[in-house]
Figure 1 (cartoon, one colour):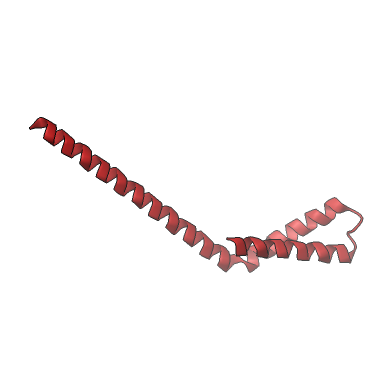
Figure 2: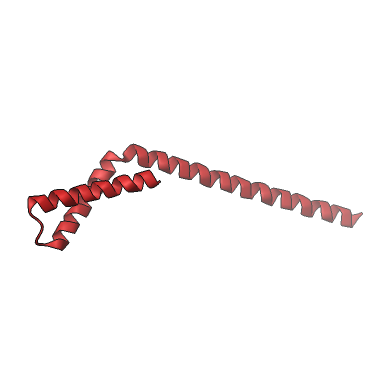
Length: 89
């Protein structure tokens, strides 16, 4: 995740430098806006594989946590059922 963020920042600052060299120095808002739009488009295209890999890891982690929660719920239900069965005896 850190690598992806750093690459996005490098792309942004690269476009910022490029647009500054081209001559957008005088209008700071236009300079930042153009760099943001261009770096967003470039990041979308250039970092697609890394973004997909990161998304897959996040989904796997979420599913593992959901499975753990389900297992805890099942074991808590089993304990409650055992207590009820013992109380009925």
